[in-house]
Length: 79
Image 1 (cartoon, rainbow, N blue to C red):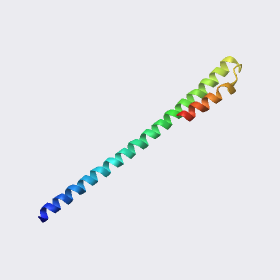
Image 2 (cartoon, one colour):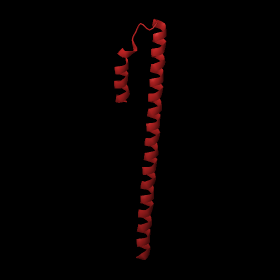
Image 3 (tube, rainbow, N blue to C red):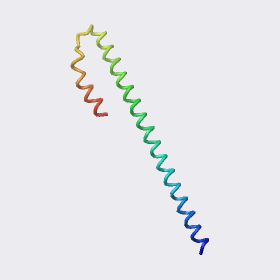
Image 4 (cartoon, one colour):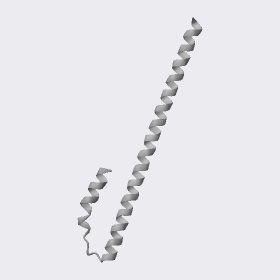
């Protein structure tokens, strides 16, 4: 009877360790996804700024930057 209780306790402990390991893996994956998303957002923002600068240089500043800024803010907030 005592061996049976010990086996059940060991099985429950192993299950708890497995569940906590999965939880840690999920948290690590979520942090990596968040970091990747932030890096991608920064790359998009940098590319957008470079494109605006190139367009401004190409048009001699005829297109006003103020027209695109509200759209940029809405896009950044949506991400």
